[in-house]
Image (cartoon, rainbow, N blue to C red; front, side, top):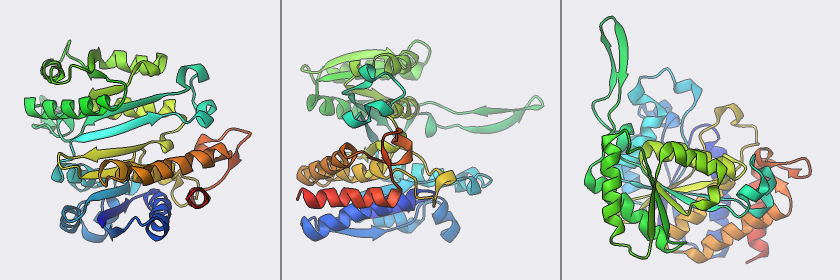
Length: 359
């Protein structure tokens, strides 16, 4: 039996996680999943109840579980808090505490959603790339950092740092994934102006020697952003730093029609993972039954595949989502004029119905 920590978080987090729980509950009851659920707090909702965006109990529970399913964190109501108390500190904290260094973000365009992309159909049709983002180092965690007063004006500073070992382990993760795909890795950096990226490129080149069957290329981040829009299907696996990966993965998400369609996995060296949609808490639409839950449901599939060793049920979830889309059902964010627009709850119900019909 596997044990999973459920962290709905803030904003639309509870709504979308509830739809994923419908899928899990069905699989537990009818597909012998045997997943035990532990419910916890993170982000703004955790701060409201405990005064801490990452309570000690949440970390303790995570250490007793096999993986985590996360909704989203953040919202306007907590923006005035001291930085160390904001919801995002809970998210960064649990990534760091559990050493979830490898963030895996697929950008896959379902054929039925090709018209939902803002790019021409022939540019994005058949898109299937993965961005592997280093998640617990880089400029988001580097020190010193802060805002100070000097010469009668304020100045802000952050430090971008990477050790050789941090670069090496994310490199190995990317190359191992590429071996299961089309055997191409593109390492994205800014080595022409940043010393930390010079080291990144050197270490990636060294790691590549352990994978002679995988082709390594290098690309500056500004060019990579342009190429993702110009010719995205040239990529297979992209590996990059925390900051660059944050930006490029959101760019890749929109190639697929909506940020609401893409799941992600953040995994440590032991295979423990936190699974979440890549979108935010979207407080402006919370409680309106219009959020797209498919990325969260697909995050459950990723969890089964990468942490719980159950590719069979992962395939079934992905097939159920594809079937619902092929029937023309859409949440508002991915709908065209000819589609059947439905709400968050109905989308979750339809995915479960599809699972039932294909069991």
